[in-house]
Image 1 (cartoon, rainbow, N blue to C red):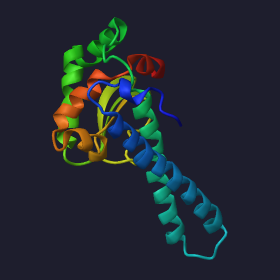
Image 2 (image 1 turned 90 degrees about the vertical axis):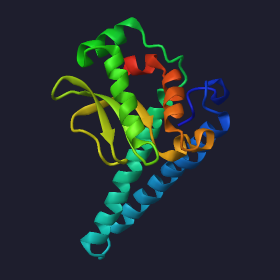
Image 3 (image 1 turned 180 degrees about the horizontal axis):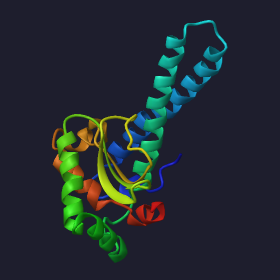
Image 4 (image 1 turned 45 degrees about the vertical axis):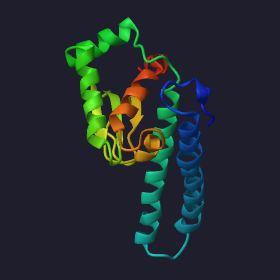
Length: 186
């Protein structure tokens, strides 16, 4: 999937970083997912033991998660970072205030700085709640939860521009949120 924005138009996230992230991490996951799908087609009819097949299925889960989360991440970038009043009100109703939502979202990201994972604002459709989630990797997602806003906290998403200064990356991410995309996801 092509980038939905012009990389030089982002504030605080360099074109070099965004293009590298898209070409190497996202596109690499797409290629790997296609390879794994081919291996699964071949392995399902093989006489290999089932545990080898489940190794491919685990990799299938990892690569699928990476592709989907990266697509959601890139799709929610390219905006001015200013949430419209209706979304601010909706987040305030769920978290006590818009600032409380943002503080928690940023805090989760800061906790992942220097490591890996994702921060997701999600709509838990089973519980009917908007909640922020910590995702340890590409395979952990809360059940019945639709991702609305996705922030990549793997070091590849910020190291080139910010080194270990994850908080500065989080600031830049927040300044580039495309809230129209978030609204459409709701």
